Length: 190
Image (tube, rainbow, N blue to C red; front, side, top):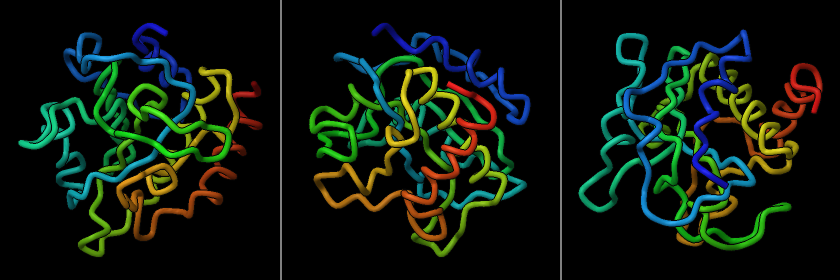
């Protein structure tokens, strides 16, 4: 599959989402193959707020000293707005173990990564606007990939290195998938 240049346009179709296209998103990618068949959910670990809804923005675009960016495709802010970060392969998943219908393999090839900008390790819960926007974005993306809710996985379900995201008060993976399924059935109707 070519880069997911359709991401922003797909999200714009959901009138409940506010979408922000990050400058340079169409050319932002890591080397390597990219053939997504599912969505992988994450948290950034940054404390977000109404005053600073996207504190992890620079990091997900540019990366960290130990990991080059981009680090996701979509970033969900505290205010529920969704930033489209990259259309190409992103460094968000590393090696993935099999989970649900998704096989083991290169997670950066197989998944579109959605980061929710909050800090559960500091006791912060995601805002309800973030959770709702994350569900809606996951439903929009997974249906565009021709898949259903089972193709939405949490990083904790696929990580081979003990990642636990999205953590804290974020809905458990099965409950999150059920809500994604509601959006698929009641809005996207695949």
